[in-house]
Amino acid sequence: MAESELTKEIKLALRDYAPQMKSKMRTIRWAEEVDVGTGYVDAIRFEDYVERDDSFCARPTCKIDGREYPCKDCTGCVFIRRRYELGILTTCFEIKISKSDFKSHNGHNFVGNRNYYVIPKELYKQIVDLVPEDVGIILYHGHRCLIKKKDSAHKDIDQSDLSRFLYNALKKWADGYYRGDIVDHNPNPTLPAHGPI
Image (cartoon, rainbow, N blue to C red; front, side, top):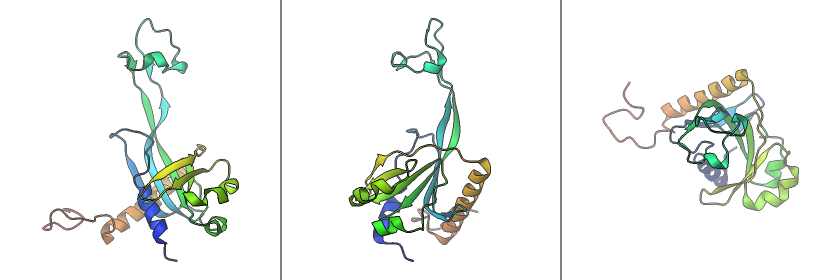
């Protein structure tokens, strides 16, 4: 079945949706219509996130216990020593554009660390009571504007599942790459669209 224009708009908006880390050093990868074992998820995103923060204050006279760090007194402190352990955060997005679409048995494939329904803002009041407690809601306001209405609970996923999701997403990235779906503009027409080989 062909996607509606609204679904396409929402998928485009999701490509730029709020990353977990507000750093240019992060990595974010996403794919659409990925097989996750229970079906195909509309969009899945993999990104760096701080899995564990072991930052501490190196000031010899500091009285702050490591478990309470950072406190308000540490903001901007030159003695802060940042130590992070990064993990891969997997987020699944299921797009529903009508109540009947929401109630269908298709497309409720929530297998990520975080899982969200992405819906037009007008649909929110009709489905809010039907959304499971651990699943978040993101509202689409048009013009590529997405606003999180309800946060998703975080759940752990097996490394084997993560590997399978990444592999299936990788197949989408590579297939799209050579079909020309990913490279829109070739700045150097003397080179093939996929770059030098």
